[in-house]
Each structure stands twice: as C-alpha cells, then as structure tokens.
Image (cartoon, rainbow, N blue to C red):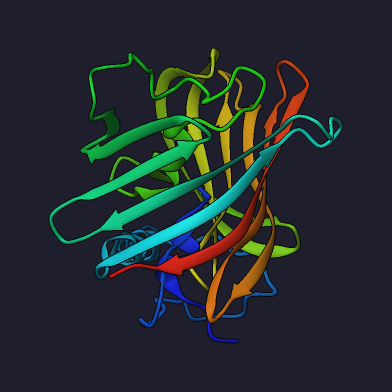
Length: 243
C-alpha cells in the first residue's frame, strides 16, 4: 500500500500527515517486535520525522464534520484550508459563519486577525473539543522532543517522544506532550497530554484511515478529555488539492 507522507502528517492530526508522492523515511527492522532505539537511532528517527513534516509544497482543502457521538443534533460542519510551503505554513478554519486564520510561528500557532480575540489553546466551540493547538501539534516537529521508548498503538509498533512543558489546552493543565509515531511509516498515531505523573488527561487518537481519490488521510480522529469525561470526533468528509 502506497502511503503519502504529507497526507498523514496533516492530522495527528489530525495531530498525523500530509504526505503525497514523496519517499517514506521508514526505520528498517522487524516491526512486529518492540525494541527501544539507541541514542543514535532515536536521533535519526527524529530527524526523518522532521524531514517528513517539512517536505514539499502542498495546499489542501479538507471538509470535515465535528460532532459529539452521543448527541446526534450536536454537529458542526466546516472546512480547513492548509497551505504548506518552504517559507510558511498557514491554515484557515471555517465553521458555519465563523472564520479563523492562523500562521505557524516557531513553537505556536498565531491568530492572524485581531478583530476577534481567540486563544489558540481554547476549543472552537465550548461543547466540542478541537482546538487550533491540536492542529499545530499535528503539523509540527522539532528538537524539543526527547526519546521516550517503544510501545504499541492499536496494535502498531510505535516509537514515542515526549516534550516537557507546563501549559493548558481547552482549560486542562498538562505537564508534557507525548507523541506516538508509527515505527514503519513515520506517521503520528496518537498525541497524549500528560499530567505530573505521566497519566493522560487529554488525547488525540486516529481511529481509521481512508483513500480519498489517491490521497490517504485519517478518516476518524477521536479527541478525548479524560479530566471531564468528554469526547468528540472529527470525521474527514472530502479532500481536494489546490494549486
């Protein structure tokens, strides 16, 4: 199965990625066995993940549905227009009559327009959990992550990296962010927001993938708030490439 790097990188997001028509930097070895990487191999793995995120120019229009599974009437439909180039990465999120423009700047997503105060670590809707910070974490990769170890996510061998930072997202305090990356395809499968004792208080988890006319993307992403016992789902309805 031919997987597209930047396609999976787009989500993770969503935090996984937007890889299309470019080589995969897979880590050689037996993927059915869990094994921790040496310091050198972990550095190589992280370097290749960073290459995947920064490779190529790509503009995507993704139509999505954001909803709470137990409430059929609680659904929001919208579009995310993602622009990636060697100079900048931006995304525009449109939900019904509201529009948000963001630019990636070093370690955070910055809202471009000043006409409406909006915190990038707050959800787009009070009752649905997707935040701009979720999108940013799914797009970004840098040297702030330390190697954590090997594990499995949904039966897939992954290598996990962690970044220690005290912050909040959607009102939930966390002390670190742990990212689980598929050991073979270098795609993000899960992002955990951890408390002081490394227990998850919030999580983004890819539930399924789909081929959208040759573009492989996550189909269902679940966003879980363990602290308040809430969760929402993001479903990708269609994907188009834009020139």
